[in-house]
Image (cartoon, rainbow, N blue to C red; front, side, top):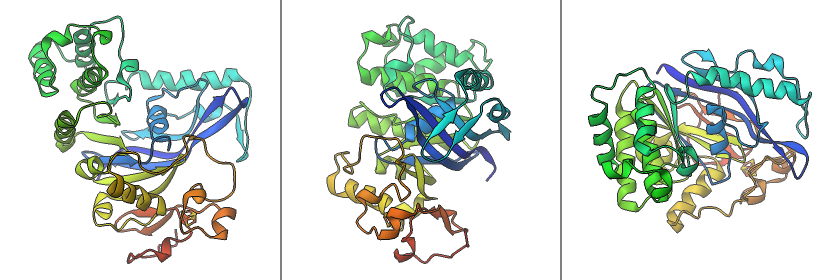
Length: 357
Ligand code: SF4
């Protein structure tokens, strides 16, 4: 499948005012999304999924947020040239940035390349929609602006918007209001309308059904499924909801403490053949609890500076080596493109092929 989008070695840092230092919150993340494919980023709240989405969109919070690595979209590296204008020394424990002018250059440099793409070719459904909506404009105006972003004219616009609103269980009257007039769930659906109406090549949906009641939740997932069934459109679906991940995606990238710990076809998850203890704990928690509480994970999403595995403290099968050495992401099945980051993946019940990776 032709790759529409690819991340390579993405690292994201944010400045922690309390600690007076930069924290690495995303570490060496890499994955691809094919044209017409849906990839799910799966992990607990606070695992770094949203930071990855924000990095892609160039809206890293806590400025000056810093991103490094390569973000390819339609074959072009959106971060090209930015490595040279910012001198960063990252020795694993500490990040040293040569004063802020360069850091700001980076931010604005990325902003320039993203300006032409954001909302048009790559759109995002943000978590906590109210912050993504303009409080001073009526919602219909904001949806119309999104519709017109891709150079379309106004003919057919009203009908297209009304149809989409209807499918999201929203009325024309509600669209004539301001964000503060609506509930959080309604604002979330307005945000979905804004992101989808632009018909982007890549839609990033970050926990899109948060705050939405169960009957509507399925309606929205079906809408996203329809979007993803168009061979020209790709979807990055970010969720901790296993059922939704299984329903929508063809591939899964599991994120734990800002790192990829497992990537595989969704079919592997469905068949119960995932290998990483974190993935399996998430699945188990989902099966047992069914209330979205999941693991007893730390709220802290920065990456531990210790040398070992970041899942060590919660892992039931940890060994001494796990504390001392960080495992590499190993390609265990090249045919299925299944990779796992765990010293003990070999003990799992799965007919693996060692690629030497
Ligand atoms: S490397 Fe060790 S601690 Fe980490 S997930 Fe694997 S077994 Fe558990």
